[in-house]
Amino acid sequence: MTQHTLQGRSETELLWFQRRSFLQAAAAWSALGGSFAAEAQSRSNIVELLGDATVNGVRLSPQQAIQTGDEIATGPKSNLIFVVGNSAFHVRQNSRLTVERGATLNAVSLLRLLTGAVVSVWGKGTNRQIVTPTITAGIRGTGVYTEIFANQGGRSYFCNCYGTVDMSAGADKLVNIASYHKAYWGEVTPKEGRSLTPAKAINHTDEELEFLARLTDQRTAWQISGKKGSKESQNY
Image (cartoon, rainbow, N blue to C red; front, side, top):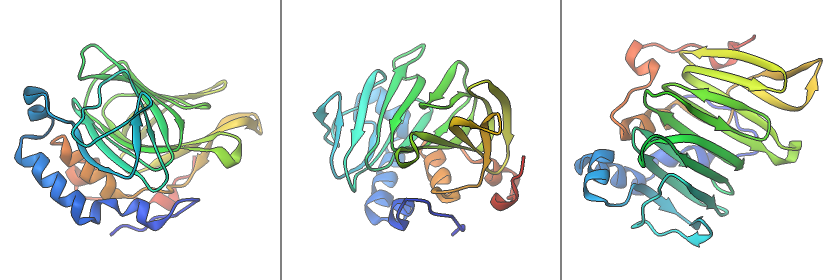
């Protein structure tokens, strides 16, 4: 189990992949062929739903399917894991986001996070973004963690866990290339003239990314290379 730093999140939120219910749901998902089977059979693309969640304002059931174009909201102590095409998402409690349609029904072109947090793994593709109130991130093929801190005025946190991301906030732009967690804050008001400022890895784990990648028949960069870096030594 990797070490992780918590900031305003509970330990149980990060250990969802250890629950028996998730392991059983993931095994069933894999046995049916995962996302490809979901598309072919028009079955639900929800891997696990705990607690209350809504889609377009209507209460969500585990038998439903989440489509691109939907607005998703989770309640307190809720947990939602779903797959669209070659991308997998884990939405934490008290979150609200939209997944906008790309070239096809099963392609997400933009994830707009309005409140809360989401862990996501994206297969290779182009013209895809994650947008928060303070950060825009162009996604290629990567795994990322995104969170909005309402108690900090909507300050956004973005960790590129692996892959390449084109990031912008205010007047700042950069290409974030990571093999093991490179994080930034998207500041509401620039700090010392900068809207993108360095951050440590918080509120997510390697195992979360690994399990989401597995749902779409992918592997993380550190699984492929067989080695990890240090989350605490990222200074930019």
